[in-house]
Length: 127
Image (tube, rainbow, N blue to C red; front, side, top):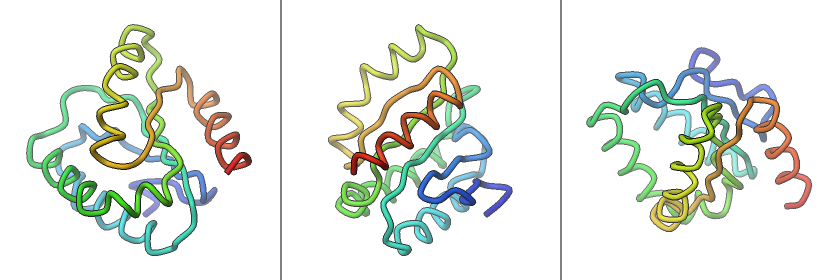
């Protein structure tokens, strides 16, 4: 799990690599299974993407998220993407409501890792 994400601070889970890393989906699905099996509520923090997610990886993650929509709605308080670019953050915020509807978990963007940590901690305290 360490090279994929940091779960040391569960319920805050930080992904080590952006989702556009080719071939990441099998490990992502495996780790998500472990996370939801744990049964605790959590927040995921993703690093800013550096490009487009490969089609095969996006398809695998999409299928997993759809199959686990109810569980994600119960356990995942938010998926937070760290995106330093203000224009990119605004673009992400526009699509987040559609993604939440499709996959069950709320999503937001933060400018920095520190802001993402603050948002995650606030969500955990209020839930």
